[in-house]
Image (cartoon, rainbow, N blue to C red; front, side, top):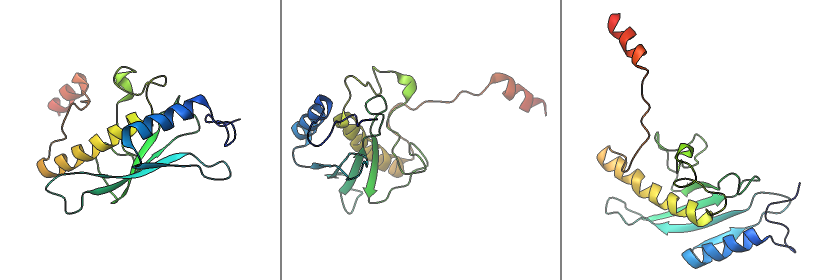
Length: 158
């Protein structure tokens, strides 16, 4: 199976679009890494989270393209400082940036979304994370899991 991005000698139009979008949005802040021997492509860069509660605003982000890209979205990680959150983060450290149930209009859209989309969401995630740490409330709309009403009735009868 060939890479979605082509080869070093024959780069796909999608990767050209991705690079132009990242450079146009973030300038030289993020650098594209092409690992040898079939590894995954990824962007890495440092952004400042300008919040008075932080001693050091610098955060290094890594945005990784999965093999199934763009059918699957790129994955974002905060690699420095190491952040762990019980909310909106997977066990491997990947940031949970959107709810797939929201559909292509509000979540990942393979024909329109790019690494810029994921990187922007990751930066928003950092601000939400520190706001949550300071206030106890995650800003924005969160999915609420509704309990089955019959389970509630069974508990009351006990």
